[in-house]
Length: 208
Image (cartoon, rainbow, N blue to C red; front, side, top):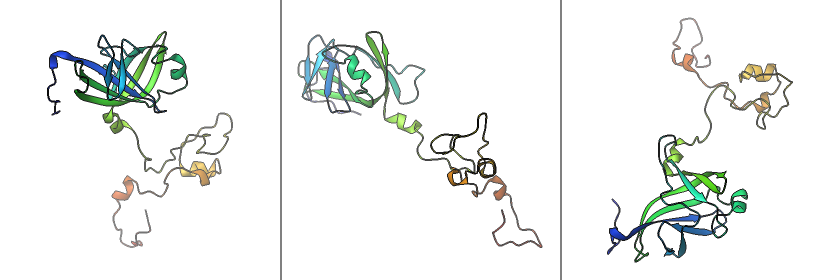
């Protein structure tokens, strides 16, 4: 449950968005009919960020939403978008008492994951904290190589038409590239779980 500021008038609430770019520049936008100063940032009325921009409709991954805006020389410009200044920018969505903008309710924060230009408008994909749960971290522990044939981690220039089944034997025998093998060929597999001692064999843990 969010704590509401004392004296907040729910009948006089407006939306405000504060965008913090990667270079530290802070921009503000609001759907109110006049500019509001929120957290020291002038949130411009009708400039750059459309009212009710967030959309968590079906089609977006968990923790993601869309935001729409218009290009504006005094706000979000085409050149800044092209320069990537909004890639990874932080966005905070706020509800503000327009009669007393210091009374603020912070609803959510997100990062701009990508921006697509659409004529004189743009569409940004916002990734919230839940999106981190979808992000792959680290490597998969597997016997097979997780590099792609010919990429930087593989480290070789394969012959035309060559394919790789990502097995250790193929990496060594076919491509002589064992030094760059990106898997764990000695990792125990499911067959190891079904092994049992056999009379007359060495049962010292060395056999797999």
